Amino acid sequence: MARHKTYECSAGCPVSATLDLIGGKWKGLILYHLLDGTLRFGELRKHIPDVTQRMLTQHLRELEASGLVHRQVYAEVPPRVEYSLTAQGQTLREVILTLKHWGEAYLGQKNRKRTLTAVAR
Amino acid sequence: MARHKTYECSAGCPVSATLDLIGGKWKGLILYHLLDGTLRFGELRKHIPDVTQRMLTQHLRELEASGLVHRQVYAEVPPRVEYSLTAQGQTLREVILTLKHWGEAYLGQKNRKRTLTAVAR
DNA sequence: CCGAATCCGTTCCGATACTG
DNA sequence: CAGTATCGGAACGGATTCGG
Image (cartoon, rainbow over all chains, first blue to last red; front, side, top):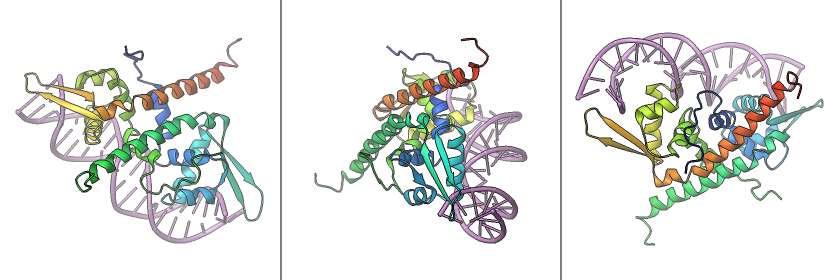
C-alpha cells in the first residue's frame, strides 16, 4: 500500500528534520531524562555519567535554540540553573518512548542471541 | 507518575542504542525509503539527492552490519545490487513513521509562525 | 555551581579519480 | 552500475584552565 511512497525529501524531510534535532550524541538522553520533569544542570550530569560538562552545555544550548528545552537561571549564590521541556518539547514524549521501547526489544534480542549457545534453555 | 523514572543508562541505554543505529546523517532517510520495498543503489541515490556515493555506501554497510538491511548482489553485467530491510529492520517501521509524523508537525508549525506576520490569514 | 575559553587529537564528510 | 582509494578541510569531542 505504501501510503508514504516516493516522497522526495531533498530538503526539509520530516524524518531527517527530527533526527537533526534529537539525533545528537546526547540529545536523546537529555530529553529522555527531562520527560520526568525539571532538572538542574548537576542533576543531569549525574543521570548521564559519561557526558562531559562541555558537551552537556553545548547540547542543552542547541536544544534550547530549537525551542525544545527551557533554561531557567536563578540569580543566586551558588548559582542555580534548571532545565525543563517546553510545550513543544513535551510533544516529543511519545517519540522518545517509541525509541526506548524499540531499543529495549533490540537489546533484549541481542542478549538472547549471545547467550543462546551458552544457556541450555 | 513517571513510570520510567530514574533510569540509569550509562551504557546500553535503549534510547541511545536506537539513536546510534538510526541517528547517522543519512540512515533515517535510507531506512525510510526502504520501507516501501527493495531498492537498487542508484534508486536510493535518486531518492536522496544530496548524499554522496561514498556516504551512501558507508551508511548502507553500517546498517547491514547492524542487521537492519540486507544486501543482495547479482553477478550480472552491468552489476546490480539491491537493498531491502531485514525482518529486524521491518520492526523499525513504526519508529520511522513516528519520527516522520512528529517532523511534519514540527515543520508545519515552523512555517506557520514564519508566515504569520506576512499572511493576512 | 554553572559555564566560557583554549588546546588538540579524532572523526566526519565532500570532491575527485579510478576499477570490475 | 556500483562501488573503492586517497586527500584535505571541517566539525566533533575530551581535558584542562579560568571566571562570576
